[in-house]
Image (cartoon, rainbow, N blue to C red; front, side):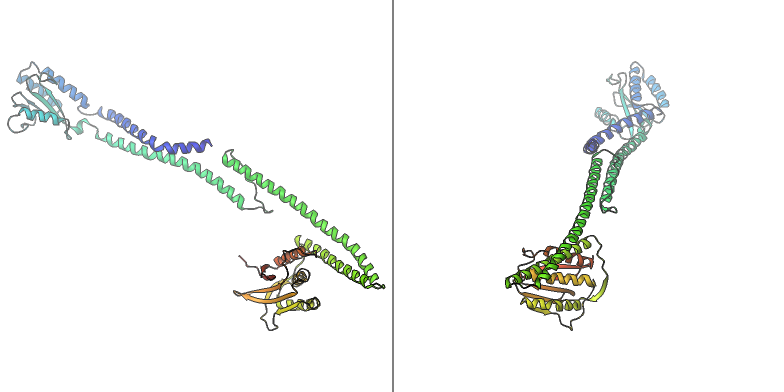
Length: 453
């Protein structure tokens, strides 16, 4: 967490800190460059020129006009490219290397004062004004002035270099900060992408593979949690497989164990049916036969469900006219519905356009038998069955409708849940789907081809 906080803190204080640092760097670099450059100036530093000029002015205190001119002449030879002149107290120019007056006629006191005031603001020349004999103090003998082109006393390139260094500092420091931040967050993104890839790429068993934990930071702890989740899922899957295996073996053993005594009971019932029995006895025997048939159907459903769930149920898909198979199945169940006094509504004409689906014939007949059997067992109160073929939005549907209490209602007959589970498993293997609609008067089951993505 410390690294993330450090990045955030640096980002917050970056601008308030980097600008003062850059300004300080500019001042220091400019001063250092100026010191290095002014050493090679032809007339020395500006401070040296100013100090020397005032010293020369002091030494002229007791000199005659000719001696002052001679001194100024020597200084003019020393400062060849400078402009030197001397104005006495009466405003007369006594010496001028440019051989021209400063102003028109005599210098008035106001002209002298104005010249001295503007000397420091001159952009082209470095000007030093000193009173003759007094340096910076007026000794009553006028003033001498020296004007040196600023290009000779200042290193103009140093300012440019200072600005260059300032620009480099303001470019390099943010670039380094951005590069470090980008590298830091790029590593985070790479690790998150790797974790996302591991999460979205399941292994052979359908469970993501664990990731390698390289760092013990927050993302490392997230990776450890992910690996723990993967481990728990794999353990849960193994446990589920074991339980599924035990369940299938239990169903197979129970089905086998139940079928043997059921066969014996069925034989004794058949023997009793040949004996002379009262009407009550015959009715009881008939009920026993019915319950035995229910129990036999339940055992068959258990075995079928076990085979379907384990993937051992062999299916052979063929392109067939399912409406023809529906008519054949209806013909087999018609007597049963008539015996139970059902109102039968068959809306499938012989001239109906064939509906070709890829189905397993035996499996599809099993689906129809289970659905029709559920109507007899659980929708007997409605005494109604309707089988129809409809086309909705260009898609064919097989419809089986009843007027019973609904498949969610409890029934006195066992096996309804397993029967519908077998129906769904068989339909799924044939890429078909079962949908249920409640009409208010009963239940409508629709079977159609599953839509592919």
